[in-house]
Structures are given as C-alpha cells and as structure tokens.
Image (cartoon, rainbow, N blue to C red; front, side, top):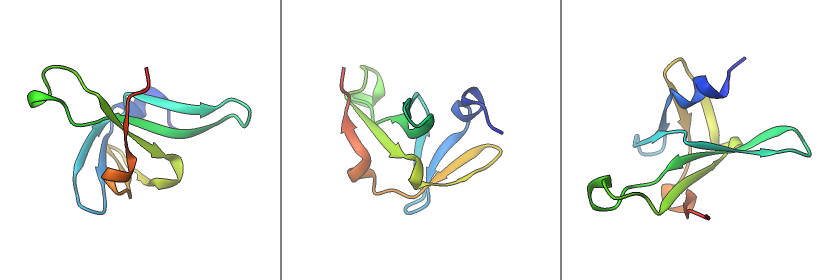
Length: 87
C-alpha cells in the first residue's frame, strides 16, 4: 500500500530517455470509479525555472511502469504528455 504523501516524495524518471521529470505536484482521481487516473508533474520552468511554470506533464496511470522505494518509472513521450496548465 502506498500513500499519496509517499508518492510525492519519489522522483519521476522516464525510462525511454532516462530524463528526470521531477516530483508529483498533483493527481487526478476518477471519483465515479474511485481510482487514480493521472499523476501531474510540473513541466520545465520559464527563465531557469524562477518565474513559475505554464506547462505540466499529465501522465496517465497506465504509463507508470514501476513504483520503487525512491523513484517512479514511467514510459512516456514527454512532448505528448506536456500540457498547458488549465487554471
């Protein structure tokens, strides 16, 4: 069993290119089905990451390949998963 707090402490790594995407900042849950559907990871920052972010990685649960002690391995095309933040 894994708690959301514990998942937020794990770094997200893309197995396709070995890139470090960051840490979970939010999740999406299907309340009707009662299951987690996506994890949300902040995208690349503007101007050295100092002035906020406009993009985020929206990674479907099906793309999570392994949850380890310190990392979560995902298999994604970063361009495909990078979405504008919907405020």
